Image (cartoon, rainbow, N blue to C red; front, top):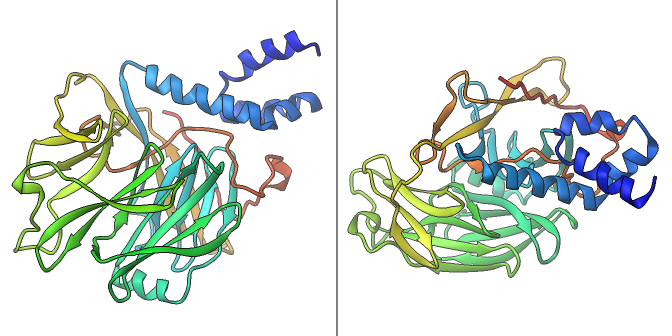
Length: 339
């Protein structure tokens, strides 16, 4: 094909769904090579991200686990560029692409991780480091305090300790925003909440300011849990609470009260189910369902999905795993159901 033909072909293919692109690979060898190229994978990803942002009714697409079906310890660690890091069983991490059914099993953490899991003293997250062109998993373990942070890059598949925090882990996923992960932690003695950030490129932990509001600074004496939750709204870090209508957003490194000027927008969720399967060697079957809202699984963009990870369909693959569908491991099963 001529260069012009490839330009035209790209403009056609870039608008297709992932499942259609996988089928297109079998049309011509040249198409397979073109669709599998890093340039096209990135262009297709950017097109899908832009399409979602330009959608006047869509807030964000999210991915979340169905706790009514999943085993108690199954969790989503985070999601970025169509890749999802999951924790299906104690001591095991997987990075998967639900759209292409590719996966990578990550190296296990030291023995202290299992103890932290049982005690639910884990802070973790997943994201993309644009500087090194690598994806990273971050885990903070408190066994005992202080909380020690471990990082694994998918290229090396090796854990390393990058620092410690004197604050106590509150558990839960890190909120990914512009290449930085954010968590709530606690100063138990002073009964104060702390926000810790981790830059995926510099691998630096920092304490960041909080809104100038007394409700955000003290852990309730009647409960060990904090009242507020970190989330993402309109691509901005936010803090919200089920006990209050207030939402604060980070704008130019300063907290502002959120004013909803886009009440017509909604979030939709891709749901991850984990069910037992006696015929499956792993013991579980993973099913991904895309909800377009017709079945009622949508919420206002300032609603219940704000703390769920952002998701976009893509051809992105975990490192060291080819895009050739013949090489894909089918030890788990995933499926998108539209509608």
